[in-house]
Image (cartoon, rainbow, N blue to C red; front, top):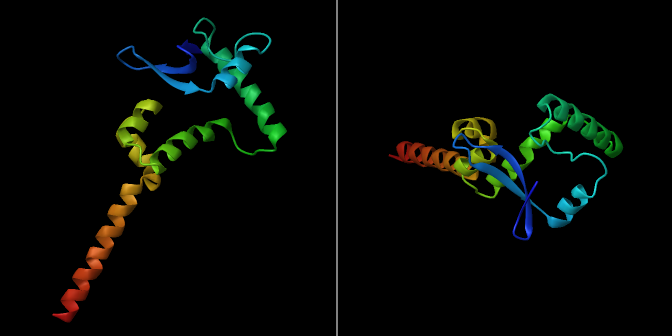
Length: 137
């Protein structure tokens, strides 16, 4: 977790260029996380990545059980991209946040890209008009 000015953010990963890709989080959430006893729940880069993955899996399992939620934590990785795309955020931006290519975003999230559906609707309506004009002519 990094504090920049008065706000906090989580470093998600490093781009191939070495630039940090981060996500802002609410200050009250950051302060609550920092107040937790014991080690930080975020990977510091000093421990073994497999160890922190196991730690998070245990944490999420407890949270899922307490909430009565079914499924697995990875499914929630899709929530943010879907919300971005429904709001009209570009596939390029979503790809940069996820660390994926635009092609991957288009392939996996195409039904949440509004302009895709608009293009499909427009093409279908144009076909109807062309068919109607041909049948009348």
